[in-house]
Length: 360
Image (cartoon, rainbow, N blue to C red; front, side):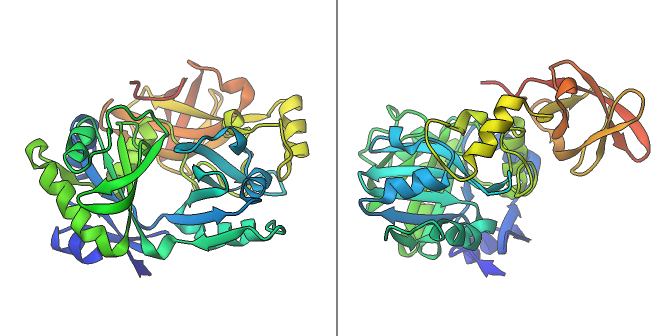
């Protein structure tokens, strides 16, 4: 198990530490519920330094990204971020990722912690044109400052105009006196805010400065437990749960980032699947009967036939009801369709809803 560079800080803060994606990670500091509401209504900070960052540079950098990713990175401009995924050759997903365009021929890819080595090797096998790739993961800390008061907190620490930044853009500048910090208007919570990339040697200074700046808002550290309930309320996929090497990106609802205007890994097969129509779909559902859906619980129809399984599920702190994601046959994927979740041999009633669960 690896430790993130600020592991000692999280231990001092009394975090419960658990193994996650090969790292010892803080899952909570106080309670999942308190931390969830802190982010939805105020401001909280996640240390997500376990995530991976690759630098991709050179005249053929864009060609390589276009080859391995499904979205169209040619539309990116300097300072723009794009959500995408790496298709495999058998109809599944190697990983989902973010593509940052720093300048022409200069990109940063942000990948999931559990897939750093896998993604690196996958991209490298297509790197036949000598694109310069560098794995920055071990030297980079990433803090997600999320919530309605994130802008007011971070603005105290930088001359960059954060309030005018559009969703999925980034700037590189000085934060808390540290130069070359990437401040990105992205996040995995749907609560607004920023993700801050900083070199390891400056991480503790920046972390402390953020908490000092957010003291008036009662800023709190937040763990992976609340990160999961926050992302699920917004219907965001989690790699390894809702998408993986065997799941179709089109069935997972990633058609919006699948651009057939170019050739990419497995694009002919995916295009064929799109034209034929998918047989099942990833849907969001909320519980009608009282109960909490958990991963791998069976989903059934009214006759009790198994139609799929829960891929992610929880009790929503905002809605105060059970919510989940899962794959069901396309004919049962329309909003308001009644389905059932099998919980300890009981069939609990649920209904399909249009994502996200929590709007706004």
